[in-house]
Length: 254
Ligand code: HEC
Image (tube, rainbow, N blue to C red; front, side, top):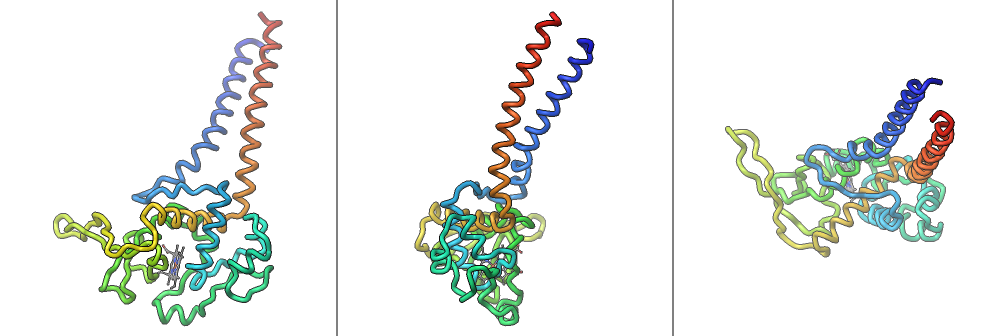
């Protein structure tokens, strides 16, 4: 091999390596940015956050929403919970440990009461993103013109009421007039009646629920994260070996 071709080869492998690293680092960053959504900073490696999210989810959301692609038993093993803990704290429907997570509400009743059926949330985080869910949960405001008295700036005219109002409190939204007679533009929220939690603690609630739904949308993501670390470690070690080997070969060339 001439010096020139081996140099070119090395440059190619180096570029390929850079590309792989950029993909590994860049993709989540790209996925996280979007519109005016707030960043949840949710992490699948934070088991405490996932457990807290599961508890909150089953207390505040599962009355209306199903998680048809999840089973209680899977949640237990993935989140490090015992069967007893799951059956006592997460399952309020009388379903069996191996069952999928059903809604506790009848879909037809829900349609009648809310005007729209609460969607299954199994894949919601994949469809809309974890930051969307986080922002959505924080964006409910009092609006007497809506049938249930609630509106949402992230999903205007959503038929879902604010399930977390006792924790968050009740906020109102301030809009400024749109330019040239256009739609009013959202400016800020104002706390109308404080809830049980201060805004910082409520952010954690919204983040943990969003995190749990991110996990539910792709339970394999937990494993992939662990595998990802090993892949990066392997790439690191491999680069070192390749470099040492190159030093060894080039000793004779010089
Ligand atoms: C009282 C019933 C009820 C409860 C409790 C409830 N939801 Fe909903 N949810 C709905 C309904 C109804 C919709 C459909 C809204 C629409 O399409 O207008 C909905 C829609 C959604 C959506 C989809 C929004 C979109 O952009 O399409 C998400 C995400 C969601 N809910 C998350 C949650 C979470 C998380 C909780 C628990 C904190 C929760 N919901 C609690 C009734 C409920």
